Every structure is written in C-alpha cells, then in structure tokens.
Length: 282
Image (tube, rainbow, N blue to C red; front, side, top):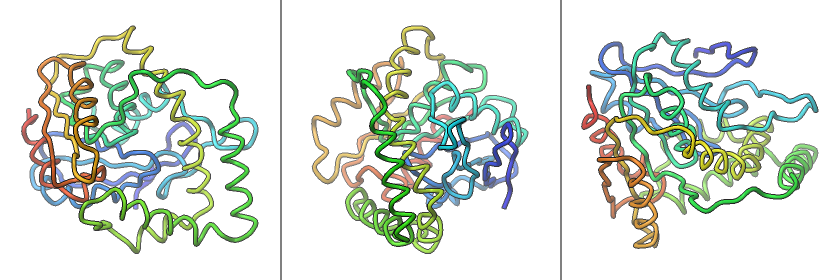
C-alpha cells in the first residue's frame, strides 16, 4: 500500500504495470480505486496505470477546512491534484486520462488547464450538466454533515455505508458484479468515507458550475477523445443525446454506445474501457 503526501494530506495511490503509455484513472462520485479492478489486467502488461483515492475516500486521509469539516471540493483544486499525483509517481509526460461520471469534471478541467500533460481522454458515462446554475446558500453541505454525525453517533455507519454500496451496484450495473465486495465492506463502513461522500455530494453543483465557466475561458486541447455511453436499463435515447452533445465539445471525439452496460461501465464492460484506452495509444 502506497501513500503520497499531497500538501499535507496523505493520498492512497495504486500503480500497475512498469512500462508503456501512462494512464490515470479518475473514479466517479464516492468511488474508490478498486472500482477499476476489472480493467487493470487488460492494460497492465503494456501500460503504466495509476489510480488514487480523493481525500477521505478509499484509504486516503481526509482534507479538512478551517471549520474542522471536510474541505469543500473545487474544480480547480481537484484538477491541480491530478497533476500533483502524477508528479509524485514520476509520470511527468502526457498521459491518457480515464474518467467516470463525476470524475469527468476533474479530467476535463485538467485537460483544459494542463493541456501539455494530457495525451487523450476516455470519458466513461460522464456526468453532463450543460444547464446547471449556482445554488443559493450551502444548506446541502450542512444537512450532509449532520446526517453523517448522526449515523456515526448511532453506530450505523458500518451498516449503512456497505448497504448503500450494494444497492448502487444492483441499480447501476447490468451484471451486478461488485469488483471487490470484501474491500467494499471494509472501505464503506468507515465514518471518514461517509463524510467524504457527503462532501462530494454537496460539492457537485458548484464543481459543475465551475466547469461551465472554465469552458468559456480555456480551450480543450487537440487530443483524441472517446466517450463511452451506457444505454442499458432505461437510460435510452435522451441520455445518449446528452452524451452526444457533450462529445460535440471535443472535435473528433468518438461516441461508443454500450447497450449491454449501465452506469458502472467498468464493472459491466471493462473490455470497452480497455479498448478505448488502446485506441488513444501514443
């Protein structure tokens, strides 16, 4: 198990493969490094693969704000964090970034702000929020923190966290295959992780708004892009149209429809993720 010191916060980092193009994986909201486990064996033979847990998630240390609560996420800070993680593992050249769901916000921002470090991007059922607006106040964050405190006091975190994870995989995976059920129970029973999840949920809207602003300020680099879209389980035409509109932001982006996968594509179609990475090889 390896940790890197990210400006005083120790982040859990996992590396696989010893040679070849670098690939940085960025998981979705509340995700941990092992969400990508089904993809790793398909690429580790000829790629250098890097996964890490954002603060408070997986085995990473929580990053706290001045009020003693988890520090609110910002798009700029998370994009910068991607670069620092790559620096810490010695990948200073361009890499392929593979980003799922909420992680797509961070990956796109990284490409726009550090274009010299990005060789290509694979968006995996990316979150798309073209019309989102700022929310008044910060009530969502306060409510989330209160819920976490109550579950911790009542000793419910050990039951609630793993239970929610099981429900997510049943609803958002066509196969229902959790890549590591035992690790899922170990990680998501933690009150630290519960706090980090609540923090990401509360930060989602402001991060999405930041991205809309960034798109007006910084162009996307001329790199190859693959957009993987899950259409099983009722997501259907409207979701596909939203993803095609999203792909239109990146000239030449290829949209790959996956009718046998739900939102957790890495669990349902790891081969599609690996194929997309190889198609962007450099």
